[in-house]
Length: 462
Image (cartoon, rainbow, N blue to C red; front, side, top):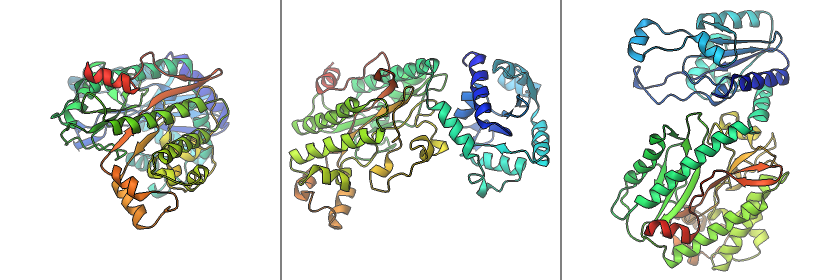
């Protein structure tokens, strides 16, 4: 936890923004994996962490904006619990750590909410993303689970996004810890991977680095020889000479702030000439993005600059033809880059994704429906305090290639005979984490992930 004054200040800011009514925060609870006492790894709701810092299951909180009151609800452990879990702080102790003086048992929560409903007071809550939260909302407020999203508070969503998207100094310190640990994870993979190993063995080494630092992974590890599959979590393949290996992995430190990096390297100690050519084109896209970052520049524009550079490179080797501006405006380049350039990052690796990309990434503006561009999670103008990823890639996806070619799509722009020569290539992605400052963009972390061909090959040969 940070100092309790930070949480007090955050809650006071939010209370002023909302102005009236109650704000209901549903903390996460234990989630059974296959029976009640065998649960998944507990992870507290990120917005609950942001405003209360209490990393513990079974708690709920209310901010009463009209009466300047804040209440934490939860049950103290019994001696039967303590026998299995050891001594635990009381709910009052946990409340005090967060700067809250009023703590009550969970049985008092429905009473307080029923009284508010009876008086016609507005009750604000965020869109639920867990089934148990929709059930709780039904029990507490009589809201049918199918209507929970519709009846959530857009005013609260926008207020939370406005606060959480601008990272404070203490948050940046934690994020940089996560980024540095993420660099260690990627370097370890580059050092250990060899022909004959399985993807699972490399992934295990990556996870070991995070776990040994008393951290966690910020999302399921992507460690694959099939880098053309964007979110490939299968780890059953054996690494073979001549292949590329793509690793997308990040650490989550004790405070739950995340890092998110991607690397691509040869299973051999050096890239083949074809791999090196495409890899360096991918790096050109990466540096194009970095050079385009500036205060008030929409991230969508940075994404499109990358698409333009990619199209130029694909044209230079004969895979595309025609006017590059037309290629990008029609979305032809998405054959090779079907995802967005990056996303916001913080307490969530895709920060606040549960609150909806329309508000987190677009300030309420409509998203594009075009293939590729519709997958851009973050598009709005860059502001100091924004933290985000830069992760362009180049992918040769046989299924996508075959679909477009069979449908006769973009034949005026695509040299299909040349494109099909790359159908077994795989995919390449490099990813780093940046923040905007008053003086421009800054790469996060004190450690630098190997990125150039020379840097990567030096690690592979080491």
